[in-house]
Length: 111
Length: 117
Image: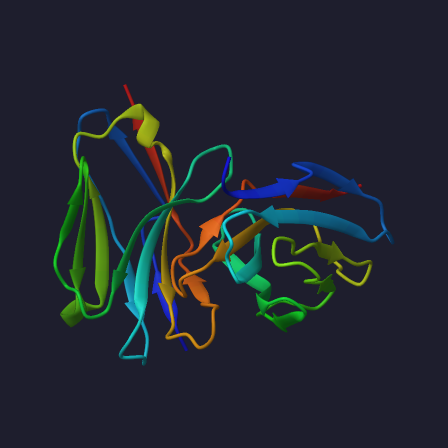
């Protein structure tokens, strides 16, 4: 199947822990993105990457980190510095400059 | 700064009714793209349509149609003869002119559509 795969679907984090959300795409897209969605709100951009070994901060990057070692993969780490991490996280990729496709999302809950 | 406004937070209709979801945007760019996405209860965002700022033709795809009017900065979405499977949150989004391979999408807050029997 072609597309964007996120894992895990549900994740629980204890206070003070770092957690990493996985995102893999087989669409051969150069650009990848991480968005955060809070209840009743739109999506906000955390980080994006245009090419391997490159990434840029989005609107709400504080408390998050990313890496882009392979074209297919763009993992997101939610660090302990993120004070309100409970949210729905969506990974996306877009190869033609303007159409962006999304994965199924990951629910992160702090316990 | 770019902004997308979806003033309708929630809409409820009975199956087979037509429904229009409103989207108003603000941008200083002359070249931009507008999108609609559907988010069913499962959570993923499903791409529906992309329209560039130079193409004001209306588009129809099955029961879906889109009306783009630059004069009023609107990009409205109509579902004809709605069905229960149309129940979802719908997002309108705006993409600024890009450089390189990436685009930055600005989303509205979404409209929740509930279609009942």
